[in-house]
Image (cartoon, rainbow, N blue to C red; front, side, top):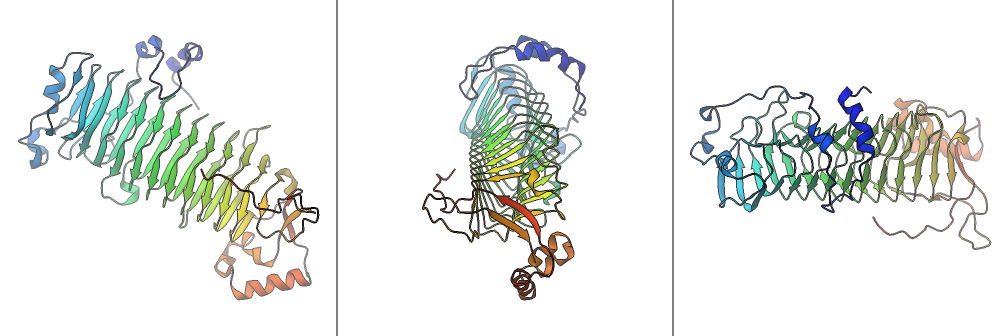
Length: 449
């Protein structure tokens, strides 16, 4: 990963900052960051005359006039009504819409651009962006720091909120819905690009494409809800991000860590990630992540791991999660070891754990204290732990792991018969998939996240 030289020069100064707890409102000033030159990352934004915009906005008062007339640092409370966009905020303001102000860009360009730091935008409805991916047409572009973006209603836009080189912002309580387009053609509901230390909280995202964080570190995604999109959250080259207390339903993928280091996913509910790519949580060449106390249910694959952990002497920790009624609870591909699974619940999954092909050394991952609903041992001393180890073997019914074409026959009567015969009188040595030396006999009670 290569970073601009000016970013590298700022890192020592940034490391000395005492960053306040996200959401407290007590931000520490960072004059060096504000004074640093910005890299030009956007294509020039075209200017569309009013005649080229949708007829519905041609008689509306322009919102830019109110912004231009407001003094820097003042509070702007516009009269309720519908206003014409686009609008650019280039000075600190507090804009309070009270839920009764609509800004409509007439289906061209971006509705609002926030270029000034220390600004509050609250209680507006933004709608009617263009549909160009080249110019990232959005409801709201953010290119500044320490802003509060709160309780906005966004619809009819290609992208929702697009943060580029925007640090320490609060994005809270917004409702975002994309344009009515095919899934791959929609923009991202919320995108972070080279944007650090932001709080993304209590937003509701529906029928969008993705929520993404690229080259963006130490952000907190808390209490958000995502429905019927592609990636609920997709991290790429984004380190030490925290995802906690979110609810993701009916998306293709819940949370995906790609080329990342560190970070955690705690207390999330991920449900019904189904279809050909359905996956609750995914890893691609990522390291040092903690997956804890999540509910991953009714997904095609609960957790999919590819070459993770990737960096030497690192691990991925999976503890206290519930994997229930998934096709495959955990699937490892290109396995390197270093995964530690402790105190998880596995119940009702068609397959608890699988490897993409045979595993030559199942001991390179560790399993301890997990509950397995198909454990066939006893607990004679009543201490809540099984008397002997839980072992999962790849018998005939798991032949599809080695030969994917056999997936079509999975759980069919003929495969069930082969599996029964294999267990009754083995005609080949089954592969050991995993061994949990201390399985739980009694399903633990756990507080729902």
